[in-house]
Length: 418
Image (cartoon, rainbow, N blue to C red; front, side):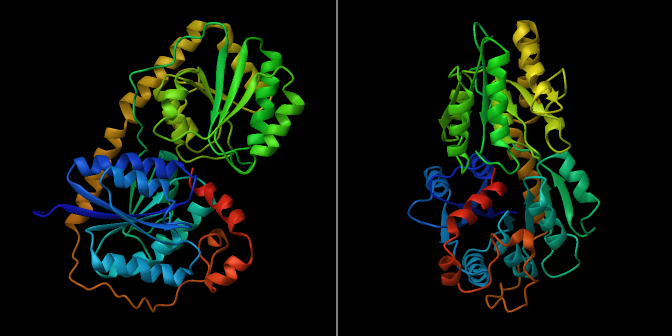
C-alpha cells in the first residue's frame, strides 16, 4: 500500500472521565502514528467543548470529531457514515460504541473492513458477540479483537467463521521507577471505578478496614471516582477507627504510575474483568497483585505464588494473603520482580501497538473500497437489546433527556469503559 494506512476508531468521551479503554486509546493511537498509521476518532459525547480524551489526543496530533451522545441511534449512524464517506479509512473500528457497530454494516458493505473490540467479560460484550459476529447478516463485523485469552477462547466458540477473532492484550508503559521494598508500613492500594457493580467497592473498602485492624503496619489508599464515593466515605467513617484507609480520588492516566509506584500491593476483588489496565499499570511498577480468583482476565496475569496471590473471598482469605506478604520481605520481593517481568515480557505498550499494526495492515490489504458509503442507512435495525439500552435509544432525543436519567445512564455506561 503506497498511501498511509488510515484507521477510524469510535469511542465515548465525557467530562471528568478517564476510563480504561480511553486510557488505552491515548497510548495506542500515537504509537500507531509512529508506525505510519494515520488514526482519527469519532466521539459520542455530552459536551464537545469538554472532552478530555479528544483534547489529549489532539495534543498528540490525533484528529477527532464529536456528536451528541443524547441523539437517537439512527442520527448517530447517519453522522458516523457521513464522517466515513468524507474521509474513507482503510479500516473502521467501532470499538465499544453500539451505534458505530450498526454503522459498520454500511461501512463493510462499501468494502471497508470493520473491527469490534471486547474489553470485558460481561453481558454487554457477550451481546456484542451475539449481535455483531454470530449472525450471518448485514451487521456482522469483519473481525473481533479480544483483550484477554479467556475472552478469545469463549468468542471463538460463538463467532461466525467469517469473522476473524484475534487476541491483543492491552499494553502499558514500564516506568524506570519501581516500588521499593516495604520498610515499616505495607502500603496497599485499589485503583479503579468506585462502583458496586463488578468492582464491589464497598466490600473492598470493608476488606481494607478489616486488614488494617488485623494486620499491624498496613495502610490503604483508594484511587478513583464514581457513584459509590459517598457510601465508601461513610464506611470509612464508621469502620476505619485507626484512620489508616484514605480515598485519594481520580488521577489522570498519564500520572497514575507515579502515584502507584509509592506503594507495595495492588488489590482487585472484582466479580469479573477483561484485562484490567489498572492491574497492568501497577504490576509494571512492581506492585504485588492480590486478586479474587475469577475465571476471566485475572488468572492470565496473576499466577498464584509466582506473580501475585489469588484469594477465594474478600474476607479471611484476603486478610491471610496480606499477612503473608507483610510477614516476609523476601516473599514481596520475589512476587514484585516476577510481576514486573511479566509486564515487560508480554504487556508493554510497544508490544500492543505492534500487534495492532499487524492486524490493521492485514485487514487493509483486504480493503476494496470501490463502493460509495450509503448515507441513507435505511435498512431496518434489529430490535433494541436489553444489554444495549444505555447506548441504543430509538426515540426522539428530547424524550430521552426528559427522563432526567442521563447521569444515571452515564454512570452505568461507565461499566463498559473500565
